[in-house]
Structures are given as structure tokens and as C-alpha cells.
Amino acid sequence: MDLLSDVVAFMRCGRPASVRVSWKAPWGVSFRVAPGSAGFHVLLRGSCWLLPSEGGPVPLSVGDVVFLPHSGPFGLADDPARALVESDCEPHSELFASAASTGSGAETVTLSCTYRIDADRTHPILDALPDVIHLPATLGSHPELRAAVELLAAEIESPRPGTDTVVTSLLDMLQLYVLRAYFETQDEPCTLSGWAAALADPSIGRALDAIHRTPAHRWTVESLGVQAGMSRAGFARRFTGLVGQSPLAYLTWWRLVSAARILRESDASVAEVAGRVGYGSEFAFGNAFKREFGVAPGRYRQRVGSG
Image (cartoon, rainbow, N blue to C red; front, side, top):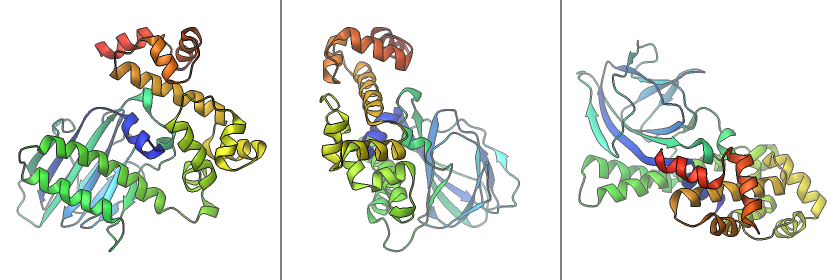
């Protein structure tokens, strides 16, 4: 798995949810987002305004995609000056649903999708994202993203046998395409910083890819530097400056996050999990896991299993 694939796979818990809504002017709705949620919104027809909790209104046109990676209230309206009515329902909990407002004016159709994010598996790359990512529908840009949006909208509008599986897969794809498109549309590499620069840097990217693909390997700063094609000292400085952690600190964190996922999703023994993520002894693994998650691996499995 590459890094962006891991971000999508590891950050979610439970099923995603989506809803296609036909709004008729005049309309304006405010939404409360549950803590630990992220979501994206696509404009399928008409135009409207996104009203974030901070910052000015964002005009949306057909094909625009907005990703809100952090929990927080927001509004959608046909006019930025429109008084907002608080949504009378919790964020949609169905895999896919359709709804319509009761107005009589111009129609706007939105597709909204939400995810629950487990704090235990939130990748630091998400912390580097702004509160609002707006990807305008520019002709010829991000064709994969546009194709995924069209397929998802079609499945939700006309469900058929297999739609549950198709929608779940498309939501995963759309999340990945949104992140990819965002990082690809950042400034020139020389002006990037943080995770955006780490992903754009071929040398650091190769080291990150090596860590994510084979976390159990006995990596050292020197061997990761070889993967990056850099000297040990130069690699360590650049990796730490961009990622915010030293190479071995990031490796340790990724091993433990990977272990937590295995504990949640399999019946592998604690000793097996330790070996699969690169620990030579169950004791060493247990101590490291408890420092990261506050509980021993066995207790963690019981907690997430009962939650």
C-alpha cells in the first residue's frame, strides 16, 4: 500500500454514508458535524454557497468538490446572505440516500458523503490539511475524480443489484482522488512545506513508501537513506524537517498503528501481531503499544471489540 492509500484505509471506522439532495430555492441549511467526522460535498446541478465556520463564503458551481477534513459546523445555501435553518436530522447514517427540499425556485443538487474517523488511526497528514479544500471543476482537470463523481451519483440516483458494494468502493476512490488532486494542485515544489512537500519529494517519498510497504523490515536511518538515495545525515535532516518526526520515530508509530489495525480486524495472537510489525518479542511490543495507546494490546482488542 502507498501512503495515500493507507491514509484512506486507516482513518475510517464503520461504514461511510452519502446522500443526494435536491434543493429548491430559497434554501439555507446549517449542519453540525459530529466530532471525529470528515466529509466531502459535490455539486451535481445548479450553484450554491458553502458557508464554513471560519472564513468567507465559498461559491460552488457544477462539478465542484469540497472536502472538509476536520469536524466543524458548516452551512449550504442558495445565497450567502440567506438565514440558515439548522438541519433537523443527525448526519445521514445510510450508505446512500436521497432527499428533497420543498422550495419552488431554481434547483440545486448536492451529493454529500461523511466518514467517521478513529482517533487511534488518524494519519498526521490529515492535520496538515486546511479546514476547507475546494477543487473547482476545471475543464480537463482531475478526470479520475470527475469520473468517480459521475459514477457515484448515478448509483445513488438509480440503485441496482450490487449498489451497496459499488457505492462503498466509489466512496473510497473519491476520498483518495480528492486527496491526490489536492496535493497535485499545490504550489511549485520549491515553495511546498510539510506533508505536501514530503509527498512531492521523490527521495523522501521512496523512504515513506518503503516504510508503509514493509514496516516489519529492520529499517535503520542508513538503510532508509539508501532507499531515498541520500546520505544518512542528509536524509535524516530532510525527513524530519518535512514529516515532523525522525525516520525511526515515524517507523515506530506506523508499526504500532498497523498493529492496532491487525488487532481490530483479525484473530491473530499478540505474539503474531508483534512479529508482523517488526518486533522481536511480545514483551517489547506490548510496552511500545501501551506507550502509544495507553493500554496493552490484549486490552485494546477487548475495548475495540466491545465498542
